[in-house]
Length: 77
Image (cartoon, rainbow, N blue to C red):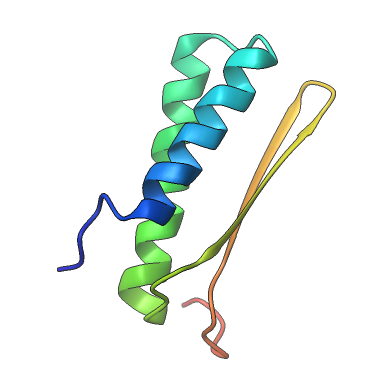
């Protein structure tokens, strides 16, 4: 199994937590979003063999969108 505390995972979690804190999101929502994002990143590592997935974090008004992209040409199953 790969190291789950790689720089990309740590940086992504820190960026998400910092952005949500600055935007005034409650700690429970931050924890939920962090868990969901980590699951997406780990799935990209495990199932798409992507060592450095691209993570995009967007804040639009009261909406948070987190996107994780991998290099696999196959669609998720």
